[in-house]
Image (cartoon, rainbow, N blue to C red):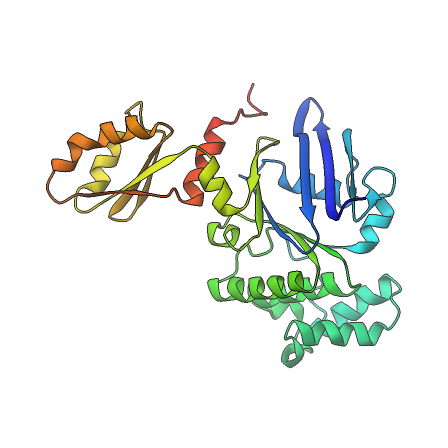
Amino acid sequence: MTDYVIDVAGLTKRFGDKTVVDSLNMQVARGEIYGFLGPNGSGKTTSIRMMCGLLTPDAGEGHTLGFDVVKEAAAIKREVGYMTQRFGLYDDLSIRENLDFIARIYGMDRRRQRVQEAIDRLGLGARHNQLAGSLSGGWKQRLALAACMLHSPRLLLLDEPTAGVDPQARRDFWDEIHKLAAEGITVLVSTHYMDEAERCHRLGYIAYGKLLAMGTPAELVRNVGLHTWAVSGEGASALSYELEANPAVALVTRYGNSVHVSGPDEAALAATLAPLQVRPGLVFQAIEPALEDVFIHLMRQAQDNFKQ
C-alpha cells in the first residue's frame, strides 16, 4: 500500500440516466489539506460520500485509509470524521449534551474524557452549557467540528464547512484545520472561497462530474495556459464590455475600478490590448492569473453533463 490516505480511480456514480461523477481519479497524501473545488452540482458531495463509504460507486475502485471503498465501507466510516454543509446537531441540547449524546450513540469508551477534550480543543469551554440553537454560525461550526473529532478520526471530510460564517470565524476555523494537519490528520475540504483554496496544500477542480485539474495553487495557475492583464483606472469597467466580444479574450473579471482580462494566447491578447493602452486614464499591467480566473476558465471549457 502507498502512503495515500485516499487513492481512487475511475469512481463513477449515476442517478437515472445522469452521470453525476464521471471516472474520478484522486490521490490525497497523509497529513495533507486537499481542497476540492467546483460549482454547485459539480459532483463534489457525491464524490466525498463515495470516498467515505456512505455511497456505493457504480464503477471504479480504490481505497480510503487502506480500506476498499466498495467492500469495506463500514470500516472506513469508523475512521472518518464527516462534516456536512448543514448543521446537524440538536438545537435544544447544550454543547456538552450534544457531544455526550453522540459519544453515547456510538458507544465510545472514555466518553466524558473525549467530550472534555473536544470542548477544550475547540475553545468551547466557556459556552459548554449554551444551547446549540442559540449559537452563531461560527460557534455552530466549532461544535460540528468538535463532534467530528470525538472518535479521533484519521481523515476529516469537510463539505463546505464555512458556508454562512463571518470572515473571522472562517480564519479561526482554518487555523484549527492546519493544526490538525500538522498532527498528521488528513483533510479533504470542499469550498467555494478562493482565499480558502489558497490555504490548501493541493487542489482538485471538478465541474460537471469530471476532475479537470489538480495540483498546488501555484501549479494550477502555471499550468492552465491562461494569460492575464490587469486594467485599472477610470473607464476600465466600460472597456470590459468592449473586450468581451474579442476572440483573443476568454475571460473578463471585474474588480471595482479594475478588470482582469485573460486569454489562452499570450501574443494575441497583448496585440488586442496594445492599441487600447494609449487611452488616457488607464493603466495596463501583465499579471499572474488569479485562482478564480483559472477556475472560471476551466468551468467554461467543460461540458455540462445535465445539458440535453
